[in-house]
Length: 232
Image 1 (cartoon, rainbow, N blue to C red):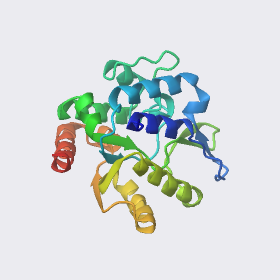
Image 2 (image 1 turned 30 degrees about the vertical axis):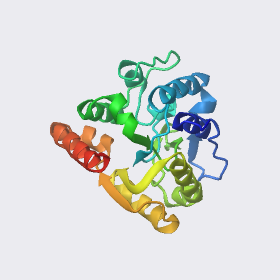
Image 3 (image 1 turned 120 degrees about the horizontal axis):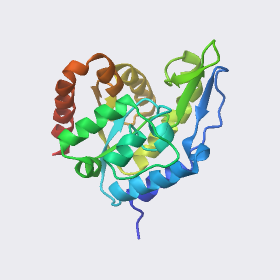
Image 4 (image 1 turned 90 degrees about the horizontal axis):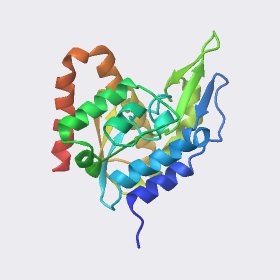
């Protein structure tokens, strides 16, 4: 019996490990190692919404934040929305992540989590959280492209990861890239590895929530229009 996409995603996450070098001020957080409950809620999420073998469209983020998938194991999903919208409570952590707010408001307008996740798969070229140590010793969220040396150290791993995402059963004709700066680097990876035919760029949820909140509905409509054009 062929594996469902849920089984493939769960195996992918269970085997996630980055052992490469990093610039001194950066480190990687692997939630599947740090918190045993992350594996449990992640498995429940994918068994609930991806328990089939249907091909899906790919939405590509940057890398998880410490408060979203860096805790729940589900991209753009904090513990609030994991429980309130997806019906999966998490007992060992309680997080709020602003990108998750936008994504789930957009999903609600799209038609709900069941309809959305039947058609789309969200993940990142670097699917583990990255943090950077500031001069005062505090650790803050970081993006894979924040530092040229960091991007260089992660590039080969990200190309391999994108290929592994595609192998889950994704449509490569068009990929939806979240974030304009992210798109610059995804385009570089795509030119080297020839992964996708077309990149469609959408504003990143964090940018919308932080700087364009008054126009949020316009961005939700923009997302849905772009996604529906290719999912009909």
